[in-house]
Image (cartoon, rainbow, N blue to C red; front, side, top):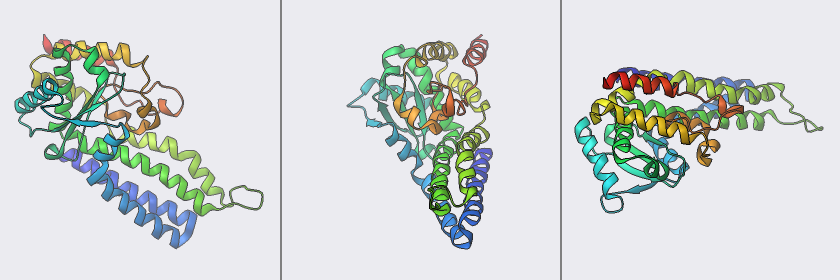
Amino acid sequence: MFGNWLKTAVLMAGILALFGVVGAAVGGAQGMTIAFLIGVGMNFFAYWFSDRMVLKMYNAREVDAVSAPQFYAMVRELAGRAGLPMPRVYLIDEAQPNAFATGRNPENAAVAATTGILQLLSAREIRGVMAHELAHVRHRDILISTVSATMAGAISMLANFAMLFGGRDENGRPANPLAGILVMFLAPLAASLIQMAISRAREYEADRGGAEISGDPLALADALAKIDAYARSIPMAAAEAHPETAQMMIMNPLAGGGIAGLFSTHPPTAERIARLRAFGR
């Protein structure tokens, strides 16, 4: 738990420093002040509201014991087994089978699943998937995961800031070459930020934790095999539009290639399945 708090603090401090340095390079003292204030605001927003923003990106709708009785009861039973407060439960109207957890702590957590995953998997396999997501909540992965996604979006804002203060000459070219260089490198930097902040090892730990919570490691292994087979062929529009959120999902939702390929933060599915089957034995 302390490790994730430390990662979050370092990530926020790094973003704040990056905003200040870029602001000073592009706009001098005034630019540094403005960029620093934007960075402070983004840090505040990321900590308190990033989970709501991510859920809104995916048009997630909250469900309860009345609107989704079986799914809600399943999450409640697993949360009890994990010793966690009952999280908010959401459904996403997407054909691609996927799921994720978000929130700043277990007391303010939310879990979400696509309608596609409910249609594809058996009840036993869905239970394995949701146990995996609750393991992320129990391990407190959700704070660093959600904040890092928001921070990656903040870096894109920084690119716009650089262009705004860089200005253009009479021929329409950037008056400040530094601004153009920043824009060129900011997208890969955002991807690197996510990959540094989110270790692939946390997926292995969540797989193992989910297997312990559900008591059925093979259910999650079977679910991962099915999701991997279907997710590649079914696009997820919201994920392609916001690749910085891909690392939150149980399976990488991106089609791959281009900038989206830089955000591949998940370990190989075959290795995850092999570990779960070994754990089951």
